[in-house]
Length: 196
Length: 360
View (cartoon, each protein chain N blue to C red):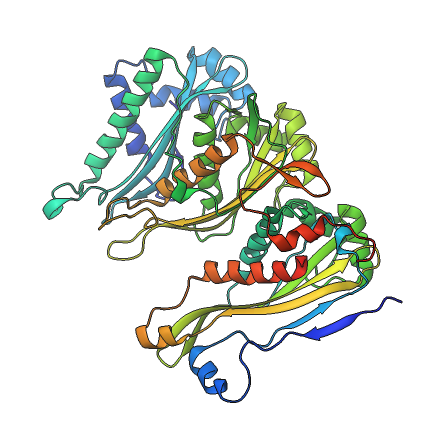
C-alpha cells in the first residue's frame, strides 16, 4: 500500500493578536491539502474535468468555475484536458447518476472511456456576494480532488477561499474584486499547488 | 433576400430592418428579388430555416428564382428604448453548387455611440439607426461586388480584447483551413447568446484569409442528417462526424457564460465565452477564454467605450481569430522537445510535470 501524507497548510493569519486584524481585514480561511506522496504526477498527461457540485446559491457557478479551471489547466501546457463535450458523452454512456461525486468504479470506467490518467472533481462551496454590515464583496470557496483513474484513488485534494470583505471594502465601499478575478486567482492557486 | 432571422427576440422588429436594408441595396443598383416572391419559393419548398442555407435549399432557390446568391439577414440586437440599439449582420451566400459565403458584414450601434458635445451626436430615432445600418451595409456590399475581394465583418483585433487564457497545439503555420462553426452552449440569460457568439465568429473567420467558413445552414443540415444533439458540448465523435460530412479541417464550438447589454446610466456591456477548435484527430487545436466589458478600452472620459454587447463580442472574437492567425511560437520543454505553446508563460511549477522522475 502506498504511503500517503496529509498536511494542513499553515494558516494565512496567525492566531492571537492578528486575529482581530483578520476579522477586520478578511483573509483566506484555513486550507487543507492532501497529496499522495507515492503518486507519480508526471505520468498524468490527459485529464478529464468532471462537472462540479454546487453548494452556492448561484446556479451557473459550477459551469463557470469548471470553464475557468479547464482553460487554466490547458493553458499551463502541463496536461491535456479532455473537451467538456467528450466528458459529457462518457458520463452519459457510463450512466453515472452523480457525475460530481463518482464512485471508485465509476472513476475507473470513465478513465478508460476518456483515455485519461486522471479525473478532477470538485465542489463550489461559495460563489457570489458576501455581506458584512454595510460592506459588500465577492467570495469564492472551492475544493478540488484529483482521482487517479487506474485505481480510482484520490491522489490530491485541496480547498481554497478567495475574496471576502476587506478593510478597503469596509472603508471605501469598493465592492471587492470582480468575481471572475477571484475565481481565476483561486483556480491558479489550486493549480500551482497541484502542479508543484 | 431571405426573410430575416431574429436572434434579438424582438417580435416584429426584424422585418422593417430587412426592408430598410433591401431598399438601400436596391438604391445602390443591386437587383434584389422581392420578399413576397422569395417567401413563396420558401413555402413551396418547405424551407423554414432562414438563418442559413443548405445545398438542397440553395438548388431550389437557384432554379426557381434564377438567382446567383442569396442575402441572409440576422437581427442580433434591437431595442427602441433609450439608448437605442441595433445589431444586424448580412451575408451573401452563393447558391451555385455548395453554398459558399461570399461576403459578410455587420452593423452594431447604440444611439449613444457618439453623443458628443451637448448630446448632439446621439441618435434617438430608430428609423435613423435603421437607415444608417442599411447605408453602411449597402456600401460594403457594393464595394465587394465592385472589386470582388472577399470581405468580412472584421473588427479590429485589439490587444484589450484578446483572450485571457490560451491553449494552442499544432496550429498549422500556413494553408487555408475550412471551419465548421457549431452553436455555442448558451449559459446566459440571453435566449440566443450561443447563436450570437457563433455568428460573430462566423464574421471574423469569414473575413480572415486563413479560414474558409462553412455556412451555418450547411452545418445545421449536417447535424440533422447525422442526428447530432450537442448536449453539454461537442464530443470527439460528434466532431469527427461533422468534419467528415463537411470535409472540414476544424470544428469550432464553445460556451457562453455571460452576455449582457449596456443600460443607460448603468453598466457597460459584458461578455464571457470559451472558444474551442477541434481538429480531425480529435485534439484541441485551440482553446481560449475571453472576458471583457465595454469599458475595458476606455482611455479617457468615455473615449474607447464599446456600447453594444454584439460589438464587444465581435472585438473579442476578432482577438481570438487574430491570435490563431499569428505565427506559432515554439518553446522547448525539457522532455517533449519543441511544442506549440500557449500565450501564457509556462508556470515554473508546471515544469515538474515534464520531469518524470521515477522517484516521484
